[in-house]
Image (cartoon, rainbow, N blue to C red; front, side):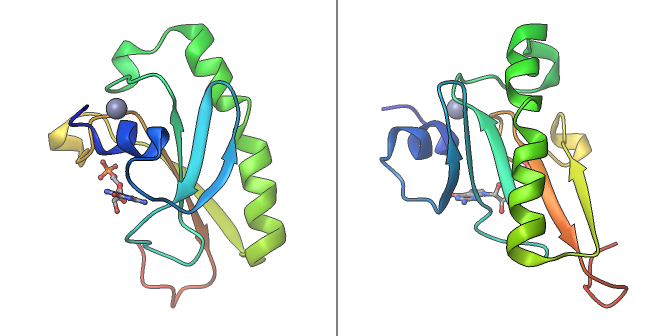
Length: 113
Ligand code: 5GP
Ligand code: ZN
């Protein structure tokens, strides 16, 4: 079995709260949300970070980003939305399977800078 936690989530070996899936990507709720509605969008292929993406693989993932954003807008009615993505441990990456964070923002009291 793979040691990658996100590959295990894709395979269903580790449970997750899935919000979207297609041939190329999988989206699920972050287990430690920094705000309400924090979602991760990942490629199904194990790609460590941005340096390993082909243009086609990146296009398949980012093609879904507006859909996820609109699901969150509908579901949580945030005031704003941050998309962010860490590459390498010094940049804050802790899971080495590419993931795009969707972090809904509510107001200045949501506790996230
Ligand atoms: P990073 O710091 O690598 O950019 O973000 C990794 C994210 O993955 C963190 O926000 C963390 O909470 C989330 N995460 C780590 N392990 C799991 C897990 O087993 N399930 C879910 N749903 N999220 C996870
Ligand atoms: Zn993986």
